[in-house]
Image 1: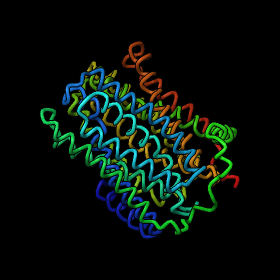
Image 2 (image 1 turned 120 degrees about the horizontal axis):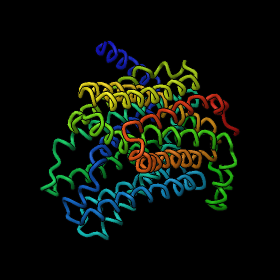
Image 3 (image 1 turned 45 degrees about the vertical axis):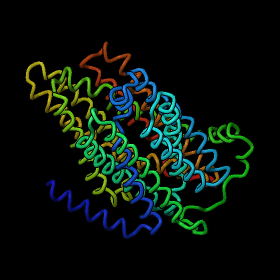
Length: 423
């Protein structure tokens, strides 16, 4: 069965790549390199600053907070610049900021430099929404969901590969290994910038139907107020934020605690399960690339919400069953993480496509920025829910995200899917 899934994924990937225009294929390849770079450094910032450079735990955790705060600001700034100035130029500025921040973190020698590097890196990471406003114009609107689905699988594969590489070479006793990782991450941003520059400024991308919105230049605040009047967008980003908080937002918050606590699973086994999650996500996404065009968006989102709800129910059952048998805890967690992986490729590409279908070309940067902001808010809200309710609900905490996902699945019929944008 696994072999047949791999063959199906390979055939789907080959077919889709042949159908995409050259600029889209180049940008997807560059995104893979960037994802590898992101995977190299993803879990290590606090460890690098606190344990390797001996700046203290407070500095390490504060730097992570600075990255998160700066990313929120970076998304709003880049989205405005993308519409009011130049989509291509805003993307390159964002990528340059991410690269510069990585370089500063790689060679930081004091706390001030570390904080500056974290802030610039956060601005770049948050501003990636402006790059995606450019990226989605590399194909026509009919192929947008296929492109985003392919990119979702490619990004997961890249992050997984980067994480494997970093875990095999990193050494907390040698700062040089971390400098290599952050330097490699800086280079990965440059790879995307080169790909963007390689597409000639005179090349008319298939989805780039109109000029930037000159009225947005009147002010970023006014520009975003105009976008937020679109109730269809608010419905989509509200749905996205809640589901993200109940799913992805719990991966680094409640899930590890439930797994290593009530479910009695070791940290090593948990790491292997997350590796399994990545493999399933990539294979499933590549296998469904062509099916994405045939499956209605509502049915796909309902399936994602139901799979996530079932995932949390399995994790909860494992936590409760571990009292009788450690195998029950591991089995519940393994099935839960597998179901979680099957839900992921059914959610992100569909919601991102819906947002870009709603977005007028002149406001695409701001629409993507608001969508990115809702996703970031979900990632922030998830740990807050876990911190407040996990000590109270304990092994039954998984029922909360399961209930939220079920409610979100029931609300899918009210979402503005497939309505298109007003031009």
